[in-house]
Structure formats: C-alpha cells, structure tokens
Image (cartoon, rainbow, N blue to C red; front, top):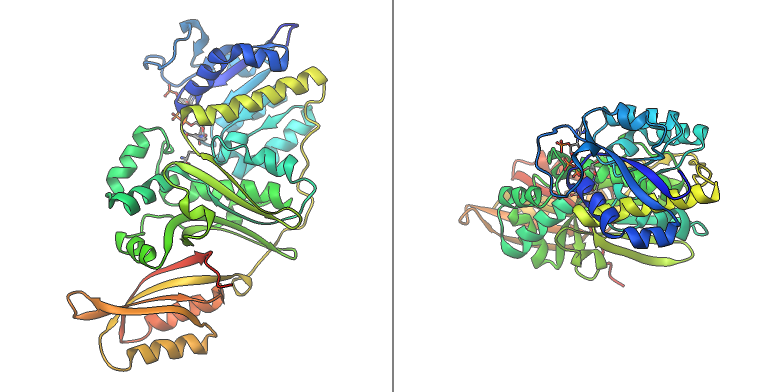
Length: 434
Ligand code: NAP
Ligand code: HSE
C-alpha cells in the first residue's frame, strides 16, 4: 500500500473475475470514499492469453505467470477466482508466506484446506476472507461471524447451490428436461467448470461444511457431511411432492441438539408453508435458527458474475479498511468446540417413501406391519394404480422417525416379494402439525 492506492493481484478472469474487474472499475469512486484509497488491479493471472475477454483491460496486465503476482512486493492483496484445489492452494499459501492478504471465492479449497490456510494467515498476520464461497451475493458468512456472535445457532437449512435450484425450479414449474436446464445454467455462468460438483451435491456439501464450521464453532470437514445430489430426482417425484403440498429442493441441513451435530445435503421435500419452499431459480436462501434470536432467513442470488463479484469486492474493502487500521489477521476465531457427530439413531426427521408393489390383497398390511415393527408412524398414505394398473404405487409421508429406523424399514421393504421397488426415499422438512 502506498499513500493513495492498494494494489491487487487478480487470479482468474472468468465469470467471477470479470465481475470483479467490472465492479472495481465501475464503483471506484464509492470504493475510494469508503476506504480512503483507490483499488488498482496490477496483474491478472489467466490460463489462456488468446481468449477474448468481456471487459476492457490493458493487455500488459494479463499474465500466465503466477510469480508475477505472488512474488511482486508491490501487490498487497491477492484475489483468487480461479477455483479448484491445485494449483490455487499453492498460490495462496505462497502469497500468504509473502505477507499478502487473500480474498477467495473458492469453497472447494476452503472446505478442504481452510484450517491450514487460516493458520498460515494468522502466522503471517494476514487477512483471508471468503464470503463469496457460500451463497454468492448473500453476506451470510459475515452474518454468522458478526451478526450472530452473541447467540447460539441451533439450525441452519440452506438452498446453497444455484445451479440445482435453477434445474429443480424449471423441472417443477415448466416440466423442463433435466439435461436441457443444466446446459442453460452452464451458459449463464452458474455451474462449476465440472457441473457434477453441482448436481451430485459436492458443491452444496462444501458450503455446508463452511457454514457449520462458522455457525457451530467446530472444525467440520467435508468428510463429516453426508451428501446426495439431484441426478436421480424424477419428474414423478416432483409431481407427487407438489400434490402433497411440498416443493423438491436440494437442501443443506446443519442441526445442533445439545452438543451433537448433524450436517447433510440431500433432495428434500420442503412444505409450502416453509419460507425455503418459495426460493426459486438461481436464488439461494439460508434459514438460521438461533436460541435467542429465533428464526431468521437470508435470501439472494447464489451465483452469477456480478452477485458473486459483489461479495468478493466487499471482502476486498474489509481488507483495505483493516490495512488502514493496522489490524489485519486479528479478526478470525479458530473453531473452539469439540466436534461430536450424531449417529443415525440420533437424526430425526419426517420421510417421504414411494414404492412400486403388487396390486393384491394384504400388501398394505405387510407394509404397515414393517413400519410398526420399526416404530415409524404415518402422517399420510396414498395408493394408486401404476404401470397401466398392472402394479400399484404406494406413497407415504411418515411422522418423525430416526434415520436408522427408516433405513431398516427400507431394507425390510426391499426384502418383501410383493415390493418390486423402493422408488424413492426423501427427507421431509416443514409442515409440522401444530
Ligand atoms: P471460470 O469462469 O471457469 O473462470 C476461471 C478463471 O481462472 C479463468 O479466467 C481461467 O483462465 C482461470 N484459470 C483456470 N485455471 C487456471 C490456472 N491453472 N492458472 C491460471 N488461471 C487459471 O470460474 P468462475 O465461475 O469465475 O469461478 C471462479 C471461482 O469462484 C470458483 O472457485 C467458483 O467455485 C467460485 N464461485 C463461482 C460462482 C459463479 O457463479 N460462477 C459463484 C460463487 C463462487 P482462462 O480464462 O484463461 O481460461
Ligand atoms: N456452482 C455454484 C452454484 C456457484 O450453482 O451455486 C456458486 O457457488
């Protein structure tokens, strides 16, 4: 930092990097008024020099050599919007080693190596901020770290992947085809470079690991998060859900009961009366329940060029303010609670089950006997003809039951000759009878 400007090394000029350049260029006057300094992008690291860019930047700023950023003593802050674990982790660690502050949108890296990066930052007195890594433009990490610092969070439920919410919304509202909508989401810049991370739930799991680390003050790893994506969700499931008064959402759930924690991501039926049910398209939302505050909800665009870049540049503003105050690297609190994870018998929820069965006398009785043997009671049950009346379809929503018992029920159903297939099993949230 000289007296007038802060020099930024931007790694990546794709969807988010382009937005960062646009916001720094377009909001320079406001940013300068807030920080007292101008923000100057000194170098931009890319992979392909020949690619046409969607922003106008002097060509001498662009480089293929990461050393020109991480080893340039004039650069104060590295903004990393490349993504992935390698080589970004090495670039970030080297930048920190050289005393540079870091802003990143990289949830893969922060979910997998966040502790190592934050510890290096602390050792070097540097800031690391990663607001854009969860829920794009929604300032949820700041809310957890600052806004809820006086409370004890008991539950966070989030629609934290814009691509899958976009796909499920289009399938539900327009009957659109899964593969077509995925292509659209990729074109709009919502999806990861490898969209399997979105549709198979990895991306949401990483975000839930970050949220639960900050919200519950425990060191949650990606391995602690059970996850399942949306690639097996069928239009039939979505239509049944709608008929029963639910919307299908890829939901991240983090719950703390006493000191026991569960964190998971799965397609979930969310009752229409719950505010998360009406979160559509690329929008994200995180419902947070605190012991003292009660229910709160954060809503906004979860992906895309400018929403994500807003969060990145806001982090940059915080770094610059800290530089002026001389307090960089002092704000982060390491997880201080013991991580105690629930077993399947301690995870409780309602569940939706859909079975294809033989359409003959006594089948429903066998099904209800198995449910009773496993202490599972039904809130709703419906049978209808299936496959032109050659079989029957049984659709059930249970009352609260343990996950362990529901898994045993599924196994017992699968062992029955009269059950041809357990078509679907989903968690259900909201719609509790008062
Ligand atoms: P992207 O469009 O694929 O852009 C990646 C950029 O990084 C490109 O400019 C690419 O260079 C550059 N790059 C890739 N590998 C490189 C390497 N080895 N060395 C140097 N440069 C390299 O990605 P994005 O969508 O902007 O996402 C960036 C990060 O933000 C990811 O961590 C992502 O998870 C996160 N994020 C994205 C969104 C979103 O809505 N897209 C939202 C929140 C968070 P070329 O241009 O030369 O190919
Ligand atoms: N691929 C991510 C999503 C980008 O769809 O939510 C934002 O993290």
